[in-house]
Structures are given as C-alpha cells and as structure tokens.
Image (tube, rainbow, N blue to C red):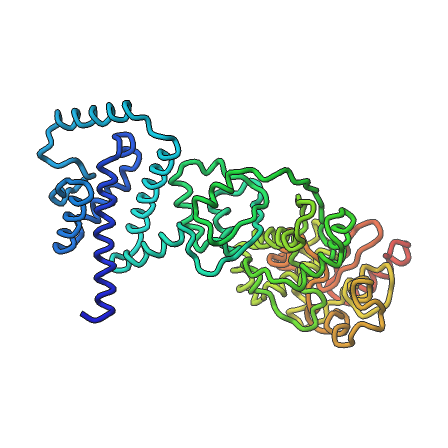
Length: 476
C-alpha cells in the first residue's frame, strides 16, 4: 500500500473508531439527553450503517473494547441497548445507575469536565457528518486542534465585541483578528454548550493558542467598566472634519485618526478590495466613513474607531447595490464619488434629480461643473480643493497642491468624475447616485438663497435662470 493510500486508510479507521466512541457516549446518555440530541443520534446511525464491512468490524470491536457491549445489527434508528436486554432489565439498569448517582455525589468540577467531554464528542459528531467520508479523519484532527487551541504561531490581539453581537458575529470578530480559524465551528461549539446568551461585549485581550473553552470562559466575564462617548458624524463631512470631531470629543488627535483611516489596512471588509486605487486621490478614506452616531470606548485604539465606521459603510452597501453598479458600468469608487457630489449639491428631496443631471452630463461627455470640486481659490464656497487640499491637514497652502491633483479634482476643466469622493455621503445620496430620476432631460441646475432648485435643459435656459436670480437678489 503506497503512502497516500495508507494515509486514507488511517483516516478511515480513525473515523470508524470515533463513531464507536460517539455510540458509546450515546449509550451513557439519559433519556432526556437522547431526546434532546435525537437528530444528531439519527445521523450517527446513518453513518454507522454506511460503513463498509471491514470498517464496521473495526467499529464493533472498538465499541466492545470501550463499553463492553456488542454492536447492534446496523440499526436504522438511534442506538439502543443490545436486543437481548429486555425492557425490564433496561429499567432495572437505569434504576441501578440512578441509585449509584445518589450514593456518590460527583464533585462539581469533575461534573463540569465530564459535561465538556460529552459536548466535545457531540461536536465531533457534527464535524464528521458534515464532511466527506474519505476526509473525515483529517477533518476531525484539524477541528480537534482548532478547538483545543493548536493553531500554529501565536497571535495576541485586543478584540472589541460590539454590544448586541450574536455568537456568529463574535466568531467572525475572532476569526478576523486571527484568534481562531473558523467562526462557524466556534458558533457550533458555543451553541452546544447552550449558554451563548451569557457572552459579554467589550474589549478582550486574547491569544490564538487559547482553546474554545478558554475563549468562551473569558467572553462570559464582563470586562471592567469602560467609559464610552457618543459621537455624531453628519452627512457630507470630510475625513478631515471627522478627525476634528474626534479630537474635539477627546477620543484621539486628528492626526491619529487620519493616520489610522488613510494608512492602515481594513481588508476584513468586503468593500475594501473594490475601491479604485487612483494615485491622485487625496485621502483614500474619503467617502467610506459612513455618517451616523457611534459609541466609542474612551482610550481605545484609533484603528478600532475607524474600523467601526468602515464596518457600518460595509453593511450599508448591499448586494443589490453592487449589482446596480454593474448595470451602470460603474465601480464602487465612481458611485461613491458621484454620491459625494450629490450630497454636497443636494442631500435632500432633489437628490435624484441632481444625480440625473450629473448622469446626463457624464453620458454626454460634458464636464460636471460642480463648485464643490473646482480649481478656484475662493474661500467660503464649500470647495474641496480650497477647504481640504489646501487646508492645514492637506498641503497647507493653495500653491502647494500638486498640479496633477488640481486637475484630477477639477470638475470644470476636467471631464468626468473627480479623482475621488469630496465628502462622506449618506445613504440617500448613495441611492440617488445609483438610481437617479428616470427620464430626466435636464443638464443644468441652479439653487437660490431660499433653498429652491431651478433645473434647465439648455445652457441658454440656465443662464436666463441665473440672471433672474441675480436680479431678484437671491443668487448664491
């Protein structure tokens, strides 16, 4: 037998022995335990029935060695005591077992260990029945190592579990942090212990060599009280403004926030790999920090704070939205860039119409002509180049902005979308960018100081509207 076939055979034999161990465990269950695990026991019997003759003999031999009982004749239902045991003898045996339990009260710690061992067997059963037969032995060894905490190089990580997280979400947090390798297996193991409601939220210092039992024990213990602070980020604010809000709240400095947002990796989020990498983008975080109200731990790492905002953005961009992007032949970055323009120019009930104007101009190879992104040194005009690129957290002065970046963001001379988003848009603006007003024939719009929007189909109409607003003294 070659080495490969020998390995397969060893895996198959390990599988048969494990089935025997599980069957023996079932024999020791109380009626209540059997009823609770009926579905798993039925599946165990189907696996036993499917064993080839040679492996069934190994199964029967192992079962007899472990329990002193003969294997049943390929039962079609849950494993019962051997047929020669009458109903009366079964009742007598149960009475004797109950009397033995009464005579010798088990130490609580021993009972807990025995309970965990039983749970481990049931977990192993589920692992086995979910995997292909030929690989079952290898899967069992991998899963057993995962549960026991044997995961290679040790990783230490401070993991933040948000309030309200379910066991799967907690497992995903642990998997993303490199503490465990399978969120699904962790969820399965935790649920078999039937007290997942006791898992706490907070920040936990964990290492990847901890067993599932150790992890669950730590996660059940509430962390010491940590002061939190609620912070609101309005729609349409830039990353720099976000950083200033965080500094004013005393959570971190603006520089720390900007560094975490723009220089660190967040590949745990689905959207991260879908962003365009444009060398002229000023801040790569711009557009992806979802505006909302958040609760942060005082003294937490800025990375965790930024991750919370990125995570919310990731949740808001649905599969339907990604499908719509493909229909429009637009990338995620293009949609968010357009949404940021819609946010700055409208962000209200006119959002879909404003978006339609931008779509019409893009489709007709016109410049967008938006004052929120143009190469004009005008203060107090909500101009991204002047307010952000030339600001104290940018290049410092107007003349210091690189020429190629000026051109890439200018929507008057540069055709198409600017290099990247000019703010962090809200959901209304994002949806408007994806689903603009249908059958809209406008190519121009103008606002007045009273908050009204004026749309036009031609440049001549647009200039006439502008002149009228000027005459009325309500042109912005």
